[in-house]
Image 1 (cartoon, rainbow over the protein chains, first blue to last red):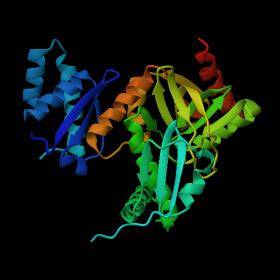
Image 2 (cartoon, each protein chain N blue to C red):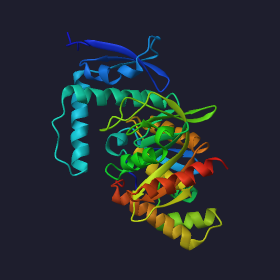
Image 3 (cartoon, chains in turn brown, blue):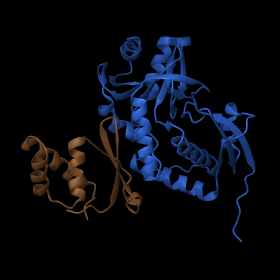
Length: 87
Length: 255
């Protein structure tokens, strides 16, 4: 999986916001709001990992429930797909 | 040689505690801002040109299409007023201020903003507060107030861009709360966290095109969240809606 655009992230009130920058800012104006876990998943998507690789890496990196990671990864990937953000 | 637009009209106004010189092609925006005129020197200059008006025409058509409405034939003078406010809202972000789409009312000098999609009933609900509180209530701005964050907390500013009923006052009031409004058969209100409110807030504040400024605006929301409370209100159009909402919001502010 590869994102079409570059994104900038910032944290506020415990939530992360991602906005498209550069050429992408002309095509995608929405703000993606994420909790801490979703933001880590987003970072792995930016690295080009697929869904199963992301889940494996998240389980390796953090002490989290597999079911929760699967659900959050799937929800975020689905949102990005629906917004047409994959190349 | 390029064509230089003629700025026939010019005036300086104090809006949201910012001294703004507006140079315009049409008179309408100057009369709109007349109650805010100042003799102090300007710190910001907003100057429109024909392409700004065309851009506003395009954006208005896109918005109306998205809302399922027929395109309106807005005058250039009216579109210029929108363009000027867009420029002011952009300047605000670097000065710890935000434009929010919502109806803002103050009771005894403490303001509450009701925000929701157009047509939900923000102005109707604020009218109920006016009926309930009468001379104790002031409509700060019925459509697009500016919010600021200062050392003493959050502030709601009246502005001339005040919606179809033209309800606003040139005031700056302490902001208590932002209330996300939904229509409902019954009246009920609950306090929600800033995190729960954020996705809706992002749809109701003015976000500029420049992505880094968008993040800057989100940072301002973060600072606002430290000083105000958030509520979700489901309400009908009975006076009880204002009684239920004000009881929760105003009593909570005294805790």
